Image (cartoon, rainbow, N blue to C red; front, side, top):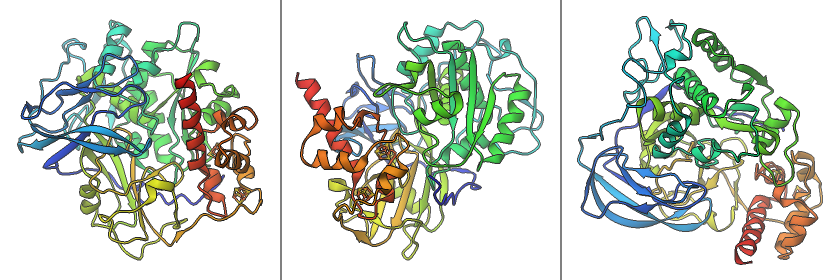
Length: 493
Ligand code: SF4
Ligand code: SF4
């Protein structure tokens, strides 16, 4: 499906957002088990210090993202689930004092990325030191140079887990779990996902341009762990500069990765779609790419893998696109836990009268009930893009690991109407489902029919059906409700 891209910030270099005075760190920011707090109220913490963890395998710990004091425990509503989550509040001491970073996995000389010439910083370890595109001269390197040949994969995975890494494209699945496929699943191909197909969002695009070496270094770490036969990097052709830049870096750094340019089309970046387009392999109903020998990772995730393994850096900040109806749209480097309000204010605030493409505020169910912090009832703040993003009514809600975009939309709010059987949702569904029947059965609580007759498990909630529906039916909301009811049944059985 071809949609207006509205990539307003594609050429905006990443800017560091000033450190907040307070952060709110939810203890559940991953698919899987929540963390338990490992610090108490009144305790002093350093930036990068672990403050929440779990014994469960499918979990990722959380860290203090500024130095200061744990001043409160609070509850926030987790947007994807709508469920309350415990969160720790840290009040800054203004010093941003870090824990000592453990670089012991890498012996003496090694920094995995080794540019030469008149560069400011090789690894971009200083905050906001993203790198530009021009006049970069890289030393050719071998795997030995990256310090990987001597590393034990188990130690690499431990370090990735300790850093609290999750899929940063929005999936928030713990990265160490994704890199630990069951023994009977041989992974022969890794696809690095640089598609970023949702309109408006440019955070991955800028990461590829400004942290390309780290992105490739992280991918090389995945190669070390999974030993695949092939590694492809999929990038949409609307990012010609990123294709060119990574192409040059691959040669300069001596890697054998292959870039696959893909047509700019929604939802090109979905794992199952990529697996089909790049390799011609169909993921089975309800299955995952690993069922057909494939693992897909996002470019920002591999950058974070590099930082964790070679720099010992916990995951405490990420790039967020702030766009739509704000005065100055930007790509910001943001400490996790920073309230959304700070990002919007830094971008000049919400700008009335700016109407983005498709600027109709859809009724997104309970989550769409806008509360006072958003000044205009026609304004909607979405975490993520216009297709898969989730309305966030509370601007004090914090940036979390999965926040790649804050999209402010203005437009008249529309109410759900009756289905007019136009068939548009069927035409656009990339999985060839029948969304209108999923809605009908979900409304009637016929969840078994959703599963057995209409293959709801194959829906990856891309939102294309809801986007195109002239009756403004929140199709994905109905699908999510049906899926969660089906999960509840499995749990209670
Ligand atoms: S049913 Fe809708 S949300 Fe699900 S895959 Fe099809 S178009 Fe995407
Ligand atoms: S697009 Fe909307 S109105 Fe048209 S058939 Fe699908 S659900 Fe019904």
